Image (cartoon, rainbow, N blue to C red; front, top):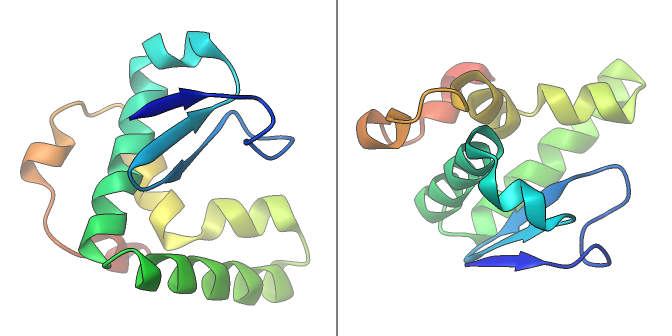
Length: 107
């Protein structure tokens, strides 16, 4: 389910996925197929990790990478979930062939 509300999305981000919602800062993003595919990959990751474990892993991995990289933006882009989503956001059939826990190869 897509929700458009610029106040729910952190500054500096166009959208965020919190199962089952894809929160967008701008309505136009709803028609951006690459962006939406990226967010749908996150939905699948959250389902695979039973939601709670996804968020725990995401936060822990972010802080570890932040400590190692000394840069929050670089740490965000280095998170394995993000690497998988950015790598395959242009492959619109990716979710049909995605294997469970595929993000692990991006650690």
